[in-house]
Each structure stands twice: as structure tokens, then as C-alpha cells.
Length: 614
Picture 1 (spheres, one colour):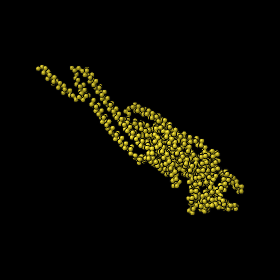
Picture 2 (cartoon, one colour):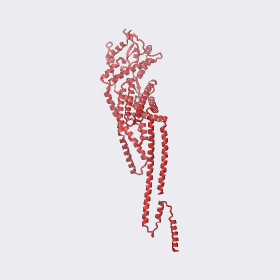
Picture 3 (tube, one colour):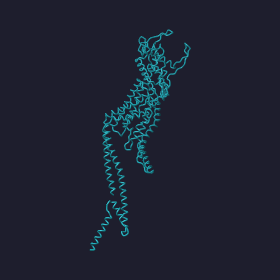
Picture 4 (cartoon, one colour):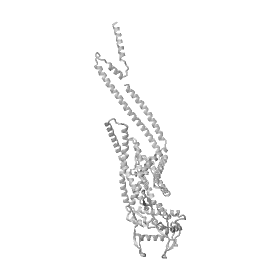
């Protein structure tokens, strides 16, 4: 019985030790909570986001709506009572903004461009005809009548009071030249800012009426400019090419930026091998003495191309078949649902599965039956947890479908237009997707108004940061000519750093006093977790101690019963009770020497007899 008492004393000592250790740990965690270690937080966030973004960018995992680093952290930190939930309303806000960003440099962006290129058709086609004066077979556009009439009207509109025309690039007054037949010609010609030979339209998304409107646009004042005859001839049928990974040249004239288009024209002028043409270009101000295009001419060229492309984009947006665009966007969004659902299955099944495996390995079963029983219980817990998250998962899938539809719809439009309109639509896409996420945040019933306001502010703050960075990198790409293999990782790294810096600044500012509330809740949770951990450890140990004490008592009871039965049946004239007495002595730790007591009894008995006899 003293063993049982000893166990209970040890249990009390263990309780004191556990209590002191947990209190010490809680104090350490409390100190970490109230201290803002923003530097470490910034570095950790940047490291995680960078890893997730590189995988998303190069392996096209945006449709999962969950990054690799989020899944890894969730699996490592998961527990049923305190799960890490990065896709919650107040989760990793910056991750939402990253997912809006798909340009021509990403895998998804390149695939979309390739799909759109397949659907391009030439807007103008040529035909052969026989010239009456020379009887020679020549080639002209089928719309030559409309083209020539439009050019004539534009040229007439450009004449000043004296009938002269000014070059729109060099601003030099026009001259006349005398042809071989004695007729007088202007040196200035009406040129198409965007060449008819490179004009294309998307056969899937532009209506028949829209195609005619585009033809009219290409032969309107919005796509005309007066250029010297020598410059127009030297420019010729300019094309813009890029080289793919196989070294093949791809014609991207129909979707070239104003800067790319202008560079191709300038390259023609500066690299012309005809010395007479080069001299004419110098005389007319298109080349300086060093044979380079002056900055003023280059800037005017870019401005004209940009204005033309913007005007063309407005026609495209006005004449687009939006029903067809929406249908294809819906198909693309439905196709992406496989990834979304797979992502949700991984998100809600894998973390508890990993947790249960770790628990099973930590608490090894003694028998096969026990292992199977634990496995069965673990499976039921996983199923119960997954079922409890079904409603949240369905909401997430619905929101993901809506975002994928909007994203696909706007991506199709973005890849149909050019220049500034393209940039504006790209910005609009990010802001619209941010608005969808903001509505989701506002509609969440589990967060306070302050938390909602803080999350929405962070979301739009990060979104605007990504928009600004994209514009900055686009500028650097044009000005410095940074190759794509360097631009994409550099842009990704910079975006991750700047967005996390934005989050850090907003967190430090704490505009809605949310961080203070988070700290208070975190401290409360810390104490609750410490209490739960203490009770769990103590109860577990107490259960084992109680089992041992009960085992000792049951054993003692059985021995006492056996002793009692032996004593009842014992015949003192035939057998000794010394063995049973020794058992009683041992059970209760009486420390009685029965041999001494027996001899003492015999001696006293002899003395008694002597006294009685006397």
C-alpha cells in the first residue's frame, strides 16, 4: 500500500514540474507575441512567397488557388484544434493579388497568346490585275478603291492655305517633284501608321460588321500620317519578329507594342544599304549625320502608332462578340475546376492525413488489432473533419469559378487589344478580381468590421503595388531591353519584396486597431492552449498512475482475501499461520518479526505458568 501512496506523491511532484515548465514556455511565447519582430517576419514571408510564386509562374498552378508553400505550411502546422488556414478570409492577402498576375512572360500567358494567334485572319487581301498602260500583271489590295479615296481625302485635309503639306514626323514643309512623264508629285505621301499587310482580326470574336469597321478604321485619319516618299519607301512592308526557344522567328506584328513596331521601322531606316536613300533620309530629317533616327522623330513615330493602336482597340471592344467571349471564358473556367477541386481535396485531406500518420508513428501499437483499431479511428476523424469543411470548400469552389471566369473573360479581351487600352484592361482585371475577393471578405460572418476593413485595405494596397511594379518593369523592359529569362525572375522577386513591404507598413500602421486585437486574442489563445496542454499531460499521467494504484489495490485485496480464507480454514494444531502473517506484515509494511514475537510470547507464557504454579 505504501507503493500506492508513493506513486501518488510522485504524481503530485510531476504535476508541479509540468506546471512550472508550461508556465515558463508560456512566458517565452508571451514575450514573443508582444514583441513585433517585423524583420524576421518580413524575411520569412518573402522566402515563402518567393518559393510559391516561382512554382506558380513556371508550372502554371494558379488555377489551384493554393500555392505550394501554403500547402507545405498547412501540413507542417496542422492540428485539429488549431489549424493553419491560409485561404481563410484573413489569410495570406498578398497571395490573392499574385494570382491576378498573368502576362505574356508566364506559362499561362504564353499559352493564351498562342491560342489567340491561331484565330487571327488577315484583314486585307491582295489580288492580281493587269495595268492598262503597261499591260503588266501587278498586285493590289481588293479594297484599293476605298484605300485610294481615303488617302486622297486625308491628303487634301492636310493642305494649308497655300496648298502645301507638312511632314508629320520632321515638321518640314512639303516639296514637289517632277516625274518622268512631266507630272508634278508631292514628296509627302499618306502612309498607314499600322501597315495593311500586318492588319489582322480575331475570327472568333469579331462580328462581320466589326470586320468592316476595322477596314474602315485602317483607312481613316486615325491610321494615316504624312511621311516623306523616301522614308515611306525605305520603311516598306515592315515586320516585327521574336525568336522562340527553338531559334525560330515568329511574326508578332499584329500584336507588337508601339515601341516594338517603331523599333522595327527605325531599324529599316538606319540599316538601309542604298546610299542614295540614306542621303535622302538625311536630307529630309529622318536620319541625322551619324545615320541615326533623331529622338523627336522616334517619339512621334511611337505616339502615332500608340494612338492608332488605341483607336483600333476601341473599335475591337465596340464590335467584339461578347457572348462568344463569355462562352469561351466559361468553358475555360469550367476546365480549370478540375484543378480547383483537386486543390480543395489536397487542402482538406492531406494535412489531417499527415497529422494522423505522425500520431500513429509516435504512439506505436503493440498488436495488429490495436493498430487496425487506431487506423479506423484516424480514418473516421479525417472523414469527419473533411465533412465539416464541405460547406467552406463549396463556397471556395464557387468563388474560384467566378474569379476564373472573370479572369478568362478579361484575358481574352486583353489579348485582342493593344497599347494603352491593353494596359488599362490589365489594371481593370486586377481591380475587378480584387473587388470579388473584397466582397467575399465583407460577406464573411466570422470576422469583425475592423478585421474586414483591414483585410480589404491590405488587399487593395497589395494589388495597387503589383500594378505599379508591372508598369515599372514594362518601362525598364522597353528602355533597357532586359531579356525575358532575366526579367521574369527579377520581376517576381521584386514583386514579392515590395508587396510584403506594403503589408508590413500597413500592419505597423494598424489603421483599424486590428493588430492589437489580434495580439489580445493570441494571448488568450496562448493561455487556453497552455491550460489544455497542462490538463492533457496531467490527465494522461494521472490515468496511468490511477491504473497502477488500482492494480496494486486489487492485488492487495486478492491477497488479503486469500489470507483470510487461509486463516479461517487453518487448524492451529496441524499447520502454521506464519506464512500468512508474513504476507500481512509485508502488505501493510508493519515491520513485525514474528519469530521474535513468538519467542517473547513463549517466555512470557513460561513466566505466567511459574507465577500461577507458585
